[in-house]
Length: 116
Picture 1 (cartoon, rainbow, N blue to C red):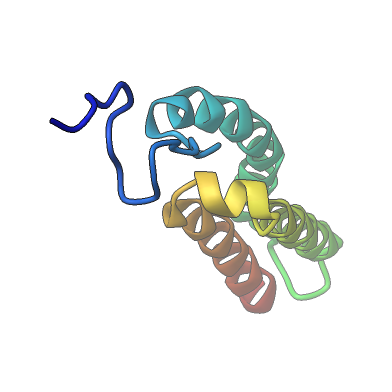
Picture 2: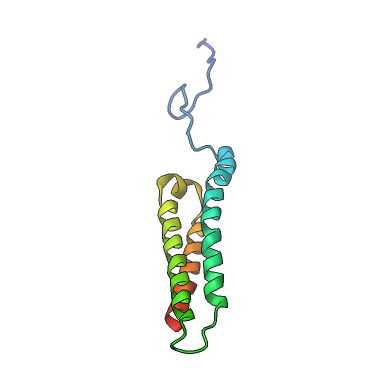
């Protein structure tokens, strides 16, 4: 009669190595990584809103430069957010929809800067 096994048998042998990226740990990690991204995108949303809300009256109005500046700030902050999202820790943990926010904001701000 063969001896009884005390450890469960797995594919890789009796000793199983646990992964660092456990699914139950990702929920808290998503919050920890998502809060700085959200705090980074709040000024971008505000700058984009101000760029959209301002309406210069004529071609020679100095408010046009302010709108273009705010749109440029929005694009720059969104680019910083994209760079932060491209870090491997964010890339593995966060979903792909986090890329949609900066692209959408930067696209709206860029179109606003061109159409002022």
